[in-house]
Length: 450
Image: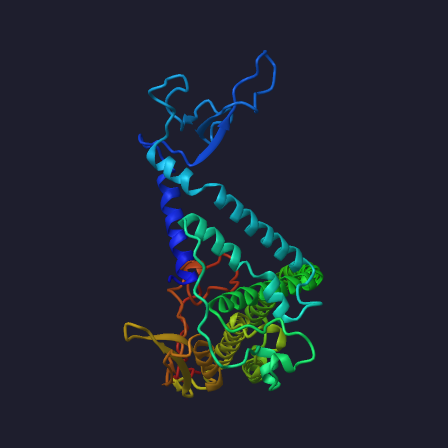
């Protein structure tokens, strides 16, 4: 005897095969959708004659008026030797879907309607789990449809007899038999294969009902979350606009700061260039000391990085370049201000410089700058390593000793030469007729004669 599950699977397979075969006619034309075509009314404008014999056509869903339909019934009612007929695949499908199948499907649909109505009322409110299973199961109706399709009316074999008393899942936990319980037990039946299917179906329906109720409960919360998300997006847009304004202000301040640094450096360079014009020849030591003091003061100045600089090195480099160049120029002017104290060549003091270099990819050390102060060279190296931590830098000490030749005294041209051409007379204001007085005559060592 086949089991109920086998009957259901066999009926489903047979129905699928028949429906697939009936989806086309002998010529391969699609005949999936069928429709009844009535004879037209007797008089023009009368409704179709629905109480008389009709035709069975396969209709095309894309053809709204049905003019492209295909007749499923072939032949003529008037021909005695050839009654109307259908294609074999259509006939087999019509025979399989007889009124018995229709009645079984109707019972199934009514039971499904009761299931959904009960689901809407929250199925487990006033009924126990066993009653819900008994009321909501559609297994019997599905089995009836399968047997109508298969053309069988056998019922499944009765479960084997057992000496164990009937029990249910709820009461067996309490150690009671159904007849010992004060209330009637709707589950007082022996376990059968159908019970497993009913329980599984019920569990799936119950979970679906619970999830549906939970979704309904959380729907207002979803609306609130959506409103909060919209508020956050609005706040984000405002913050983004404010951030854009702040970035514009920052860029403007940086541009103004760069311009002020340029103006400061230009003013320092103009002041330094104007120093040689001062007449300090009478007090060379004061002039030299003032220049060296200014250079030392500039060398001790360092760029102050605060929290608003964002760790950028552009301003540090600009500061170091401008200030250190000014300090170097002041030291050079101080060296030039020192004049030789003797007529002979005088040996000047030793000049020591610290050169900062960085190693390039081609293996050549690139010059970064030189300064008498080692701290300046270290700052230049640190500026490079901040931008590129893997860079290799070094500090080279350079010592230079140099001498200055004693300037020679310009000599006059021969007497009577134009004074403008004489190097000794250049810048002088000789008397008229602007002639060179000639070389100086050596003093005579002879005593005057009496």
